[in-house]
Amino acid sequence: MASQAWCQKEKVKNKAWFVRIILTVFYRTIEIISDMVFWLIHKKKEKTILPAFDNLLLLESASSLARKIRTRKVTSEEVVRVFIGRIKTVNPIINCVVDNRFELALEEAKKVDQLIQSGEKDEKTLELETPFLGVPFTIKDCFSVTGLRYTAGLVKRKDLIGQFDSDVVALMKKAGAIILAVTNVSELCMWWESNNNVYGRSRNPYDTNRIVGGSSGGEAALLCSGGSPFGIGSDIGGSIRMPAFFNGIFGHKPTREIVSNYEQQPVAEKVLQTFLVTGPMSRYCCDLMPMFRILAAGNIDKLKLDEKVSVSKLRYFYMESFGNIPLLSRVHPDLKEAQLKVVRHFQQAYNIPVSKVEMSKFYHAMEIWFVKMSTGGNPPFVAELAMRQGQVSVGLELLKFCVGQSDYTLPGLFMGFLEKFSLPSTHPTSVKMLAMCDELRREIQELLGDDGVLLVPPHPTAALYHNQPLTKPLNAAYTAIFNVLGFPVTQVPLGLGSWGVPLGVQVVGNLHNDHHTLAVAAELERAFGGWVSPSAVNC
Image (tube, rainbow, N blue to C red; front, side, top):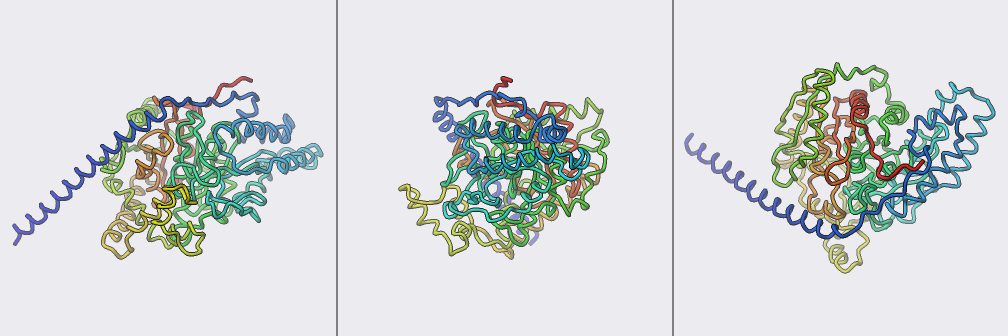
């Protein structure tokens, strides 16, 4: 009996091994063909170079601009005009801003200047009460902003106008910031290229033939190109971190349940509220912490943001990859080398050991994410595409897509199709993945303790060509897993790679240790230079 059981077990193991080999060969073949075809398509297309920066204010951090405005070295009106001008210059090239309130922003800037000139409040009071007084900011088009289009990239929502401000917009306004515009997203924010049938495709500032990521892709590209000092994104599978990575800026995914998600589309319900996070994005790391303090609002006491962090006292771990997963691209050598530079920096600059770790459960990262998302309690995605008024027929819409008559994007229909294969929470595979997620969370918590950070690639490759993510859909695993685990993650730029587009690394901290990941990000900005301008500086 024992011999028969052993033989049966070996048969199952061999069958699984054979399936993995078949899937690996199949995916590698698709990947090689994809890389060749997209390279041939784009090799003759010229990259459109962004116009040079022509005003030094465009190169300032939001924190620096706020300081200069309240100390009367520059007016808010001048700052707002400069960024409006930059948006008008770059937007025809990268297609990031989808609606704006330029005139209202200028009126608000004039009122800020009048307040400062009146002397009614001294500089210290202005800093304490309104830390970003007079500084313009932008936000992705899935948050409600009074008077601006509120589409989330869905054709059915194209005529909807925000009737009031989402919580995070209201918090930023209370801090004195001036909302300037809303930026492009993927359809209903559920794909990692920002392209939709309402506003079209956003383009990477470093190479306009390549993607900006999604769903906060328009926001990240605008920030990178100097069209806004800082902005707000949201993230349920990497929607802050992938765009921040592809566009060479900083982005922070906070610990779960810290920043309000109220009044953004699509609405995350029940447990999905813990996967979806809203967070800050900027070219400069120094803007993330003060912005995060504002966005955290009433939950700030759950964090330790006032705790001084000595990066030399932290413990460091890194992962080169999640393993040889059949349907996932291998981590590109550029990204491996960028990560090793970070490892060597801490080893040499601070004489700190940096330990390489392997966690086998990351092999199932995408399976875990899919199961957690599909069993989380939200309506199906096909219902979201129909604005929860019935459901979209994926088969019919695919037929309409083939003749150019569908209102929906191919990635959106692809997501709806995949959903048909989702398993109920009681299915043995679902039970296994849900348990594995909890086990992985505990393993990482035990590894990091209260003084550890984990360095992880943000993606297997740098920014792909437009539409190419359709051939590599599961590469989002490197970001998505941390949404269902709940840990804080800061995306850090690390210069440009051999493709001429940004490299980077994710810095993962333990729950509520956002101050650790932000401190390490600041250290890496000092060591490696942070954001790299995609255009010349003529000022």
